[in-house]
Image (cartoon, rainbow, N blue to C red; front, side):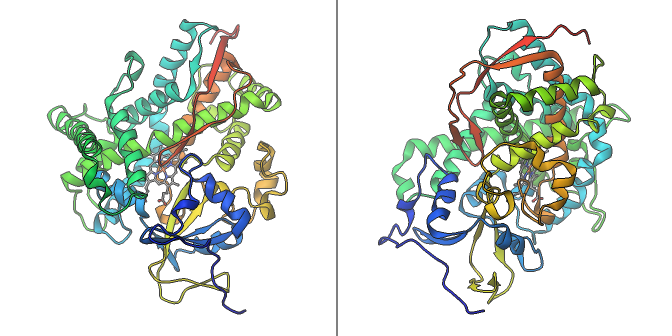
Length: 462
Ligand code: HEM
């Protein structure tokens, strides 16, 4: 096959293809551009270049870890300024990534997830009790409440710390700082060199936000050193502070533990609350799916309090989350870079060694060659056992790829499944605004904005 140039919109002087982007549409703008330029195109954004890829055929190649490695694209490099060499923003060849990966992977494995079940149920119970007390007329702010849920859950399950977000009017200051810092990390990637120097207020706010996040993390570490857990109890923070790398025998440096804490608080809740919010949105506009989900919960849980053993019986809920992550992957992109010079993609596109290739999941997950002409339709049957088996490799990538894929995948799905099961067991839900049109708020993650629901207690005694 002959080499061909990667398509690119005509660049303007200095800004290049920056005018092609649209802050309101965010990552979905890349999906639009694919209609015009195809499943692979190049963009010149100020002084950096990006190759955007959105077909299963090409992404499948990018997932070959012998040929490609995770790249920190511009927004992620900015996040590294406050998340340091924590797992998410570390380079694969950094010794701290490898050590933390070896130490922390088992801490999120099946045995640990079983131990975390009670903590997850504890926080879910708090939220559902609040909904019940507020009554069926209350307008539930879905994104806000699920953000409190997931923040409190990751903090309790991994650090044995209670943020008690449901007892506070305002969102936890850590979340406010984190959201602002994430927005700023994205915005910086699109600014002209030197532009920041003029933005004194923004810089000051960013510095304060970074400082607050580090202070919260350092405080958690100091508290733990002063008050160790009782004999026989363990959590992730313990593992971070005391476990030794099975390969080198070394512990994680204190500064690295701080960065892991910030990383887990960020990565551990923003995406999962987005998943729950998108899923509830889809359930509200697909009554047949909602009814089927509730029937499964009634069959598996009945009137029993949820137990770990129930989870494996909730296969349809799992299909719902997979389909939700297909259409609305809440961490919507990840980047890779070729390991060698002269790498050729798809037998025809020659890449530079310093190219950043962005896998845009909302585009990949709508590839008509895989998902058909009705790719926009929400249909959990796509993930029935028989049909999921037929999917080609690397067609569904909401958790990233290979050794750099999400460490919290099992955690997130267990938390989401348990919460949805408890919710449907106790409540009938309905849209507070039946005409709600999906509006997506984008930071580094995506989340529906302005979604409200009503929850009416069902007549079940648990
Ligand atoms: C990595 C998605 C929940 C912790 C990733 C990546 C994606 C992702 C796409 C790869 C990023 C890249 O290649 O640059 C999600 C989604 C979640 C979720 C969609 C929920 C639905 C969680 C939770 C935790 C977590 C609950 C913590 C308990 C991490 C960490 C990494 C990561 C630490 C970096 C792993 C490494 O490179 O070693 N996640 N995530 N995530 N995620 Fe998640």
